Length: 141
Picture 1: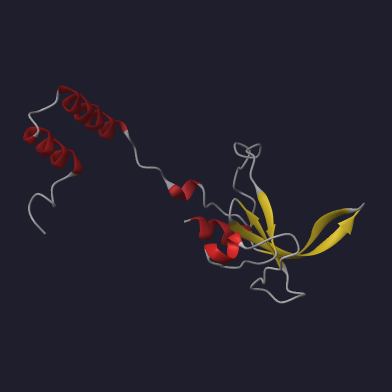
Picture 2: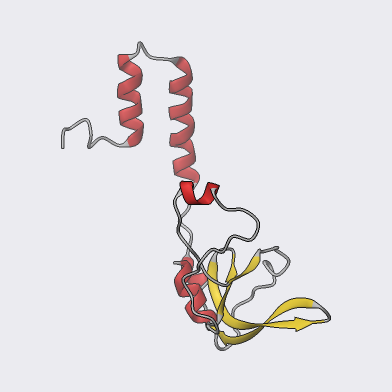
């Protein structure tokens, strides 16, 4: 690796700016980045990982944040040629067997598994296996 590749991003940016004749906007941008770097304090992740089982974690600040919950019955990978040939009545084979539990995902993260139920003519899901809060937090790291 050359010396130029090992430079800090600001130094590399300054070196590129010098080669191009030195743009004043680049200098202002580099100065703003340097100031911002000094003002930033590292976040302490320990605050978020408290004792989840004992209930000592205060989640009141995030309880009203909306999330997307989805149920996944399976996946399939097909090429574009086959995708374009799909029409009404086409069948797409999924990677799960009939009777296997569905995955319950929150913002793309698995939090539980369950089975389909019908309630008042609407689909729902009965959770059969929920991942513990401690395990969910570990998956976020």
